[in-house]
Picture 1 (cartoon, rainbow, N blue to C red):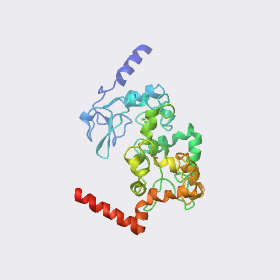
Picture 2: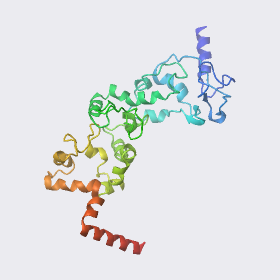
Picture 3: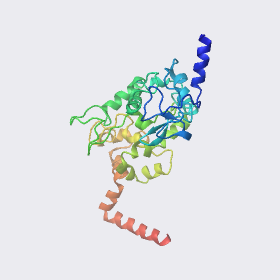
Picture 4: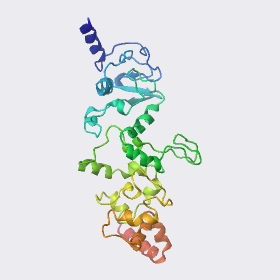
Length: 303
């Protein structure tokens, strides 16, 4: 009998097999049923058997469902894929980490009780602190800390004028996080993601990061041009007005010296004002402004 029961359970777990014809399985959310894309609609016509509890741990349990490319949910009338690629997971830095190592609030019963609220996203995005304690400590001291500020604003505050602060996963990604140590390809991939990681939130700074030797070179793919975090720090990011900030005037010699190994002095680091404010500096300099205007006119002739 135990073998027979196991065989029946295995059949029920087989991805793609319709095991019921009702609109919603027992215990499933009628607002967001799990369905096949070919039959995805407000009324479910083919579903997984979601009335069981997965008896196995980690990936072997989660990927029974999430390893199926046809697994989707209906969210606010839209079809949303819940598929996780095994190949992507196996090539990531977390290939040997169990799913529940990040999804700490997920029990093995399905459908997941917290799926409708999307609260699982914030839990997974901040679970990094359990393994990466040093990075999380630095992050907690920086401008992106989720802790309340002196004004009382928290990460979850979304009223006008208050920006949502990022969690680890908002910057680093999710299932496709690449290995960095001893992996040049992963380092190169991270280096190229400045717009995605920082620029999408700090669009004004991304746009004015256009000096010849840093911003413009970086945007053109120069491997030795600095990404945002190479100057501003990666986790303990602070406003430039804070004397502890890596880009505060008192720390520029050390910060610039990371790349410019000829030991830059105070005069050398005075160039830093051009990195984000080149346009302003040019506009304030009559000779430079005239030269820029002349170049623009000449270019217009040829274009």
